[in-house]
Image 1 (cartoon, rainbow, N blue to C red):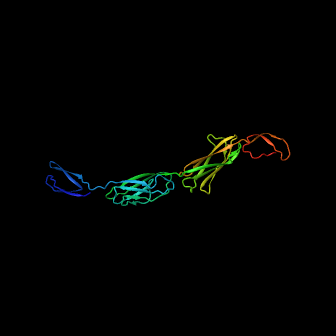
Image 2: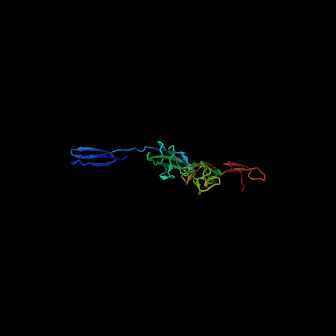
Image 3: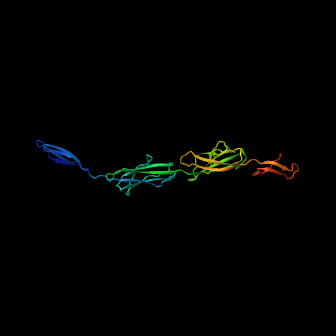
Length: 282
């Protein structure tokens, strides 16, 4: 703002000459022999208003993706810098605005799953005003799949089978999903029981969890379910299931002949022989 020095002659009683320095136009209101001096501001050139728009190199992204941010200043300023922030924390040092009015941050691949608030603050110059832009960066979880196997897949009532759940990171298969698995045989329960679950990471970057299941004391089909519970929010949950057949043991009602020599063919009558492979005589 330019300073103005204005000389005004004010007649107060004895015609004193007064020098009035100031930064504005001097307005004089004269009431009789009394003069009042009122300053009126004079404004010089003001900085040009700017807007800052923030964009992402990849939005939405997935955990582990490399992402950078660009701030575009409009109209194109004659300099200045941009300070980027992620969730309120400075991300790198201020970046100089180039001749096209843009500034780009460094890259990061450590953003966790969820939404992150990106802020770009333009510093401004003598000729261009400061401004702020924001962006919401969405980071998706790593997806997983869960498969269930039973060994054996057929048991008698109260029989046991080994239930194995294998969890795979389907987004980046080189990563082993962390966490554990919960097993169940339906809601409400079919009546079977699981012993404690043990988990370990396999050599193929998979999480493998296993438990022994004791079938209910009734024939039928039981659905065994496995729910993956990640210990890291960067991984998505997943579920899998497999069907267990519970068959009653064979029931022999008669056999003929009731005696004979070695090599004699014996006919056995009864029910529930499906799956039976041998007969033992006592």
